[in-house]
Image (cartoon, rainbow, N blue to C red; front, side, top):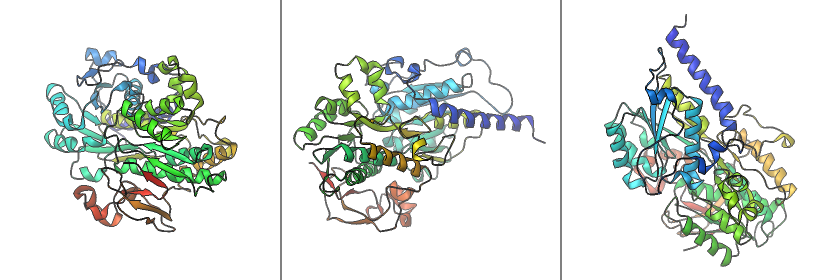
Length: 482
C-alpha cells in the first residue's frame, strides 16, 4: 500500500509533468504579454547586483504561510543572470521561465534573481546572497559560472545548485549540482538552410560572443545548413561558392554596440546579406534590417517583440519584421517547473537535462511535413515563425521535413563526412589546414558536441587536455575575420 507521504510525492511529480508539458508549450506566446514583454519585468540598472524579489511572488510565500504537510515543502530559489533581464535575449528568456514556473507552482515557490552578474564576481555575489538569506536552490545561468558553482557547492552542501550550459562532468564529484541546457545546434542548422536559400550575394555572416564549445557547434551547424540551403535552391554554385564570414568574438554575452558594429562590418565590407549571432540583444537583428539584410531571433521571440512589444514603437520595427527569417527560441519553463517540483516534493537529484527539438512536448515523434510544428511554440526549444514571404517554398518544406526528422534523430547535422580546420579558441584564427573532422558515416553524440572525445572522457572535461578536444574547429566554408 502507498503511504500518504508517497502518494503526495507521486501526485506532485505527476502534476509537474502535466504542467511541464502544457505550460512548456504555451509559455512564450504573444498572447501572454505579462510573461513575454520586457516592459512587464522588473527593471534595474545593467550593472546592478542587488537581489530582486519576483513580482509574481505568491501571497502565501509573502505572508509566510506554512508549507503543506506530508512530502511537499515550500522552497525558495535564487537565479543568477549574466545580463540584464531587459535584453530580450538569453537573460530575458530565463527570466520568463522563472516567472512562469513560479506562477505554475504558486504557493509552493518563492523566487528571487540577481541580474548582470559578471562571471568573475559570481562567487562573491552568490555567497553573499546565501549568507544573508535562506535559499534551497541556486540557478546559475551562464557557462562562465562553473568555477563559482564548484566552490559554492562544497561550502553549502544543503543547497541544490543548477548550472546552465556547463558539462556535468565538471561537477561529477558534487552530489548537490545538477546541469541543464536548451540546445540549439539543430535549430541553427535549419536557420542556415533559410540563410542559404535567400542570400543573393552568396555571403552570410556570424557575430559570436565567445568561442566556447557551445558557440562553435552552433556556428558550424549554421554554416553547414547554409550550404545545404544554397545547394537545395541551386544557388552559389550549389553551395560551393557560398562563404560564411565569422567576426572576432565579442568577448561579452551582452554587448549591443559592439555587436552592431561587427554586423555593419560584415554587411558593408564583406557583402553579407544574412546574419546570425550569439549576443543577448536585438542589436544584430536591427542592424541587419537597417541595411536590408536578413537575420533571426535569438533565445526569445524577437518577432513578437517588434510586432506587439516595446520594440513595436521603434521606427525600424516594420523593417525588422520584414527581414526576420526565423530563429532559435529557448523556453526554460518546463525545465524550471521540473526542477522546482522535484525540490518541492523532496525528489531533487543530481542529473543532466539536455533539451533538443521535440523534448518536453506532448507528441515526441515526427509528424508529416504538412502537419509540421516548425515555426510554432512547443517544448523547450523551437523555431520562431518562418517568414514564408521571403524564404522559398522549397526551403520551407525542407526545413519542416528536417525539423520533424530531428525529433527522432533521423537526421543529425553532425554526421560525416565533415571537413574543417582547427582554430585558436581565443580568437577564431585558423591554425591548421582543412582536413576531415567527422569521418564518413560517423555521427557525433553528446560528448563530441560538447567538446570532448569519447575516448578521453572523463578527463578532458576536467583537465582540458588539448588533444581530447573536439569543438576547436570551423567548417571548411567559414572564413574568420581578425
